[in-house]
Length: 392
Image (tube, rainbow, N blue to C red):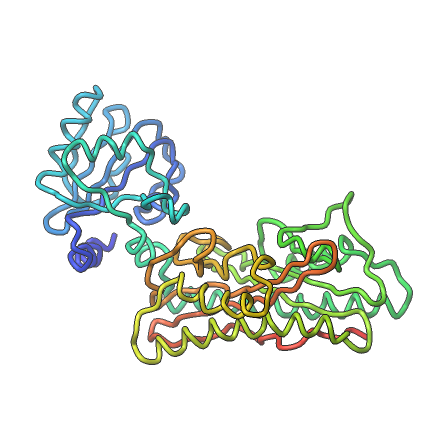
């Protein structure tokens, strides 16, 4: 536990403490930050309070009094709910403003895991509850240099699999062999396994109108053939099959033919320009030691697509945090679905993936993974796609 570092951050944020609360493992953030043993039985409510000054305090049920023994601090044990309330109030003491896994107006759903009733209880003590969003970024989504290296290793494999997929499509089309979205997806999964990678679903392999659905995934029952003249999108994400490994997530596009039609390339270029605008903002801010928030990156990217007349065709956020989960709890590049006002921190990773989706016709997306190193340098893991790839 990084108690001293957490307390330093609490003082900087002008918070009197950070209160962790969980019931039946509903809070994955608390599970990770507090290193909760996945093999222990947790059936009762528990609290762990880290004050900005002083020693932490833990509140546990008499049936499970040992569950937080691995954490430093003074232990309090309750049985009846009345004692739970009284001890919790005692533990929080003179605190006026504390952080919990909460986000005002549910603006950052990844953080909103504390139930309304518990918030009411804390507020009944005369205590203001603030979002732990900035703290979560610092102590849950921060990447060490070793973590960043893990991400880069995953990126390297993904680019190999991407190249293999496009090569396989080209070969099959030239040889008049069977070629469809599902076949290519399954071959990509085989390559993942060969490289000791794990993933939760996918990857996405789609053509033409299917590209206009950002979450389209072929199945054994639902897929399209890949033919001459088709536009192909692949979106792949995976990580090394090792404890603590970090995901990578990229999207590339290709055309089954010798020359990419101008009308397709022109739309794709708009997404590239939007991506580059977001990247330029990040570099300008970090190069000058200035803060930048997730919503600002989204605005920089989205404004390019809006100016091109596709405002209604870019209907997801610009990017998401990447960690041990492909969609992590850190800062997202978002001022559409939510407004992420958290500062992007050193030692973080996230995607930038603008898209233009034209229902019934086609979809276009480019996706890169951006690393903010622990020295504050802005890096892109892997090659950046600047044109649709002709496969023949």
